[in-house]
View 1 (cartoon, helix red, strand yellow):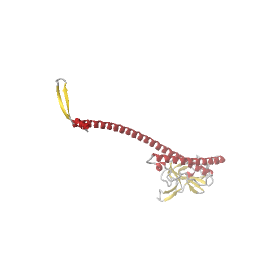
View 2 (cartoon, helix red, strand yellow; view 1 turned 120 degrees about the vertical axis):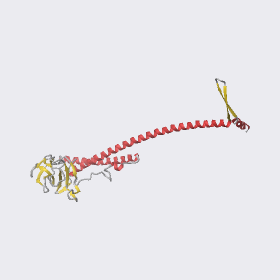
View 3 (tube, helix red, strand yellow; view 1 turned 60 degrees about the vertical axis):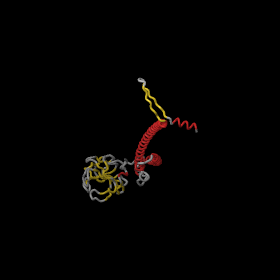
Length: 308
């Protein structure tokens, strides 16, 4: 206790600071109380400790900032890669759907199938990968979905491989596809109205559009898509020229709104032979070819036979 009391007395004594000036020998004396001196020392210690803490905090902050920037860059690169992969998967799915459509048409032609097979992807919304899986909020979910999709795609490809082998076997037995099957496009253009139900541009009512409207400039050659015999060539009931070709087996094709015809009834035509030219005559909304395919007298979708 005596020693502690002595220390306290020493601490709170007055301290003198003497400042000498070298040239004149003049000095200046400053008196500093003990408690004030102790407070200054304490304040200096606190300032040093605070500076050390701030420097360490600043260093940690900068390190965290660099880490976050690197993680963000990595996440952006991963997202870009995953989106690119999803685009490739969509392309692959579209190619597989076209392949299945091609296979379905060939199987129908060689008699392996009696009715057209649905070639759309399995499951609701499978036609659009991006709508099914994007946008996603977690990359793990997108990766999992991609793996699931690729697994289904692998199964579908295996099934198509079996179908292709069966088709090759059937084609080998037949030797080749019959030349009387309308597998090619009759004219170069674009489909302005597909086969199926539509609103008539003339009556405004729903009707069955019995063929394809293929728009093309006036004078574009129209060719026979398969071998056959011309059963009609002349003016149609609604005006304009028309041609009908019988391909055998109850299958016929017809071509309407022609500017002119290059064949006559009873004439035999070969695939690729010009039978007329695109016109804009009769009940028409513009230059185009109305192309119909009938089986047993009933209209069927020409796309059922056309191999794209």
